[in-house]
Image 1: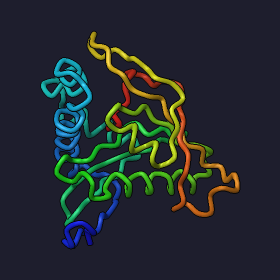
Image 2: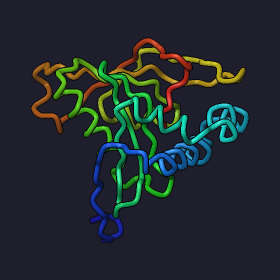
Image 3: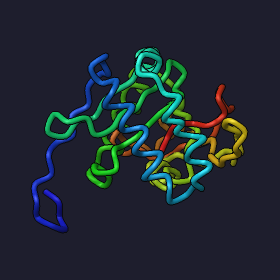
Length: 194
């Protein structure tokens, strides 16, 4: 139930990515970059990051399948997605603009974090956009470095962020998440975390 409107909010369901999700997740990525992130990046930066004319569905699917990706759904409709590699690096986290502020990103992050803890990983890392930085900070990530990667010759800004998953006595359970920081930049230079 949304406490402000008293309208029931559907439950977020997280499931593994599959081939049938390729078109929907690509559409979510493009909408998140071109609409949500446009508040923090110039039109030139958005175009360099999104590159809709250069995106091929088969290439997108192959990359998603390699990255241990998850899809969040609301009423069985894809609402967002994320991933985590065997080292705890999150390459992507995107939520469709129409599903913002419904707990989709929070549920995705909790799922990824639970997966990382189950694999006994010490930390989660991500290259995070200006737009997503407050969300990640609110969920315990800390900035390790401001970065200025080039994408097709256009400079963008993002943040290497990291969250320690080692229990330091301050965390009582996986649901009491509290800390993220930076890490080395990955190939491609700009994280796709919005």
